Length: 188
Image: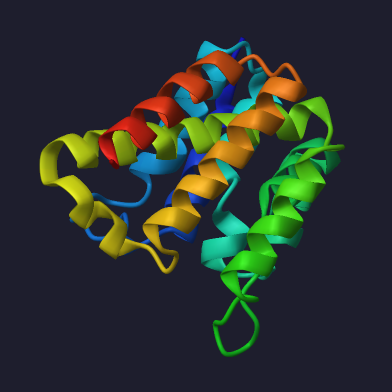
């Protein structure tokens, strides 16, 4: 059962992503956390997991100050899930660590992450993979121009994610595998 706490989490996510757009699109960024929460709920998320799904990028994209706010407003479990889904917090100049090192560290972290983190992370990656597949269908290979990583790096990352989610037997593993296989097929 969802309570008014979910609306409060959505309001904080809207604030954290104010003015942001999805890479290379005019789509308001908040559509992504909303989509991730929907995927998580479709795969059995409880309210705290759904709140974490709404807030999963708040620290990464909104700033480190959101970590404390999330912990104070929504509790340790939600804050810990968000922390476990954050693969890099920008420094004072707005820069994150190099892409390859950041993604490898995140993959290594997922191998032993909690079930809570796995559900939200895999919901996030599934939502992203489906968006890439849709963009491949609509604009083709140009979708990869949006990313700081190359096409090969992006495909490596999503294949690695799919393997980890399968090995960890996440609720989204089959859907992630299907989306990643389609992404790879359309990328040939």
